[in-house]
Image (cartoon, rainbow, N blue to C red; front, side, top):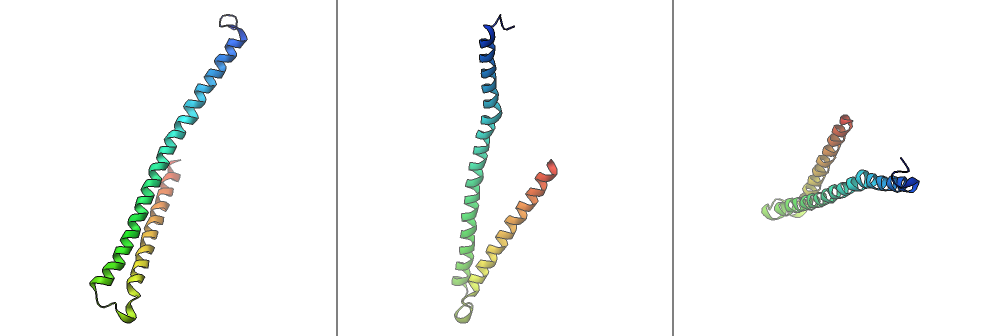
Amino acid sequence: MSNKNGGIKGDFDELISTLRAYVKQETLAPLKGLGRYLAFGLAGSTIFGIGGIFLVLATVRILQTTTDAFQGNLSFFPYLCGMTACGVLIYLVLLALKRDGRRHSSDR
């Protein structure tokens, strides 16, 4: 077989080109897909995080401006409600992560 294709050097060159094609196909292409997946995940996480902050700020502002009950000694109450809303959002995120982890571990 070596004599037909240009000897051992031809076989070696073919081996190298096959290995390069394999490495590109099996490592570089999935890594490009992973990069796209991570980019969209980070963008979505950032947008959800900013949305959560705005939601908490809106809760505090609504309680401060629309009600007169939280004046004087109770002026801390809107901030307490905002912190509670943060806690609820963090709990929901952790619950979703826990559920997602269980789903992926059962797939294997």
